[in-house]
Length: 165
Ligand code: S3P
Image (cartoon, rainbow, N blue to C red; front, side, top):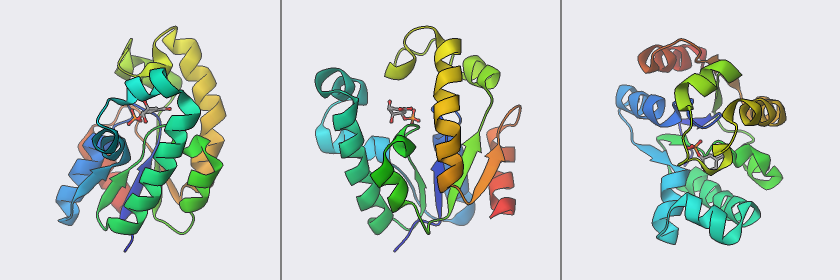
């Protein structure tokens, strides 16, 4: 079993919204590894970051991605930082991975000062720029196709994903 589509891309790019639309269009289910981790751990991701740090979270995430890739045959969305982990990137080889991209200004506009996302609690524009520079090549490395989301509604993005695959 293997997901029909795996969505990667920065937080706030619309992986969940677009993923749910894609699942509806394809008549399958949507799954999200962030939600899997929260359910398995019984606490919020921000608490895992605070209590045990990012490396521990990335390990939990790698496990969640491995399980979801093996168990799920619908649309799967990964957390925005999943590609930071080499082991997680290796798991994605051979899967239909779609990178939903956005530029820095779009990211700032969409997420603003969203403190619920622990990596962006301070100075969003600078952090976004650094985050995008570090992660863009990693998203590109795992992705079969790239779909730009700047200025596009989720429905248009979903349509573009289906056309691109
Ligand atoms: C993270 C993105 C989040 C979540 C965690 C870390 C990141 O996922 O996994 O807060 O490192 O970019 P979303 O992309 O679903 O917000």
